[in-house]
Length: 513
Image: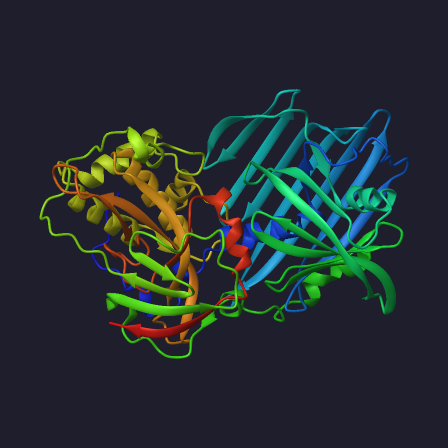
C-alpha cells in the first residue's frame, strides 16, 4: 500500500473529522428512538406475564430533527401459538454538508409469550458498510455473533435470567395495567444490541398534558425516561399507547399513518437541516489558528457535566471553567515497544470487537508502518501520519471497526481513530479512544464541532514519568492542539452520556495561546 506524498490539509475545509456521527448521532438516533425500535430487559417491576397481545399490532412513527422529517420506523408484532414474531424496520436520511446519507436498520425476533427472547437478528446498512448482530438467549447467557469488516466475532454475556424484549406497545400497556398516574416510577435493566450493553432504564410519570396528534388534542401522560446519563420524554395516552417521544438534542418521534411514514423521505428532499452545522457549538469569539493553540481556557454552560471525563490528564476543570494544556515532556526518547501488557494499562492494549488489534491484517500493517523503529514517540508519529494520509476523508454513517475502515479506506474522525487505536495497540502502545469537541478552522462558523481522537500512553525510556497524550489521526497531530476538549473516554458502549451535551452545551472562550 503506497503512501501518498502530498495531501491537502484536512483543516482547510469542514472535513469528515468534525463529527463523530456514528457515535453521537447515528447510533443515538437508533437508541433515542429505542422506545419504538428495540430495548430488551431482564426484568420489569411487576413482571410482564400479564401483557398479552392476542391480535396483530402494527405501529408507524415519523422521525424529525428541528421539526423536519428525517425518517420513519415500522414495528409489527404477530402472535403465533406460543410465540411472538416481531419485525422492525427503521430508515433515516440525513443531510451532511449537502450530502445525503441513508441508514437502514432491520430487526426480527422470536419471543416467548412472556416476552423473553428466543432469537434476535439485527442488521445495519449504511454508507460505512454492513453491521449485523445475532443473539441467542439461554437461561444464563446471551450468545452473540457480530459481523463487521468481513470478520465474525463471537461474544457471550452472562445474565441472571432470559432478557425481555421491550417495545413501545409493551411498555405503554404495562404502564396502563399498573394504573398509570403522576409520580409513578418504574426501573428495569435493558440489553441494547448495537452496543451489547446492559444498564438500567428509569421511568417517571411526571403528569398529564395535551398533545397534538393528527390535528387533534389528546390527553397524555408525560413520562421521563433516563438511560445511560441521558433523559428523553415519552407521551402515553389514556389507553396506554405511546404517541410521541422527544429528546433535548432536538430529535422527536411521532405516531403517524403508514402513508404518512412512507411519504416522509420523498417529501423531505432538500428540506432536512445540515446536521453538522445544526450541532455545532458556536462561541462568543474567534480562535485564530486553532491547530497551533497550546493553551485554552473556556467556560462550559448549559449542559449537565456529570458522567463526563472532563478533569484529568491535560485538562483541569474547576466548577464550569475548563483549562486544556498542550502536554509537554522533557525526554528525547520514549520507551521501547511493546509496553508490558500488565497492570492498570492492560485494558488499553487488548483487542475489542471494534478495535481488532489481534487481527493479522492489522498487525501486519502496523509492523510495516513502524519498520525497525522501537521508540514509542517515533512509532506513534508514524502511525498518526499513515492513518491521516491514507484514510480518505468521507462523511460516512457507520458503527466503525478497525477492519472495516482498513478495507474501505475512508471515513470520518471516528473511523480514523478506531483504526489508529487498533494499529497502536497491536504494537504494544497503550491507546484509548476519546470523544469531545474541537474548534473548527474552516471559517464557516466560529465554534466547536463534535469530534473523535485518541490518547496514547507516553513515558521515558525507563517507562517512567508516564502520561496520556492526545493525538489526532484525522488532523495528523502528535500531540493534538489544545482546542481538543475531551468529554468522554471509551468506545461505542461508553458514548451515550454525550447525548446529555448535544444541542445543549455552550462554550465561552475566556483565553487561549
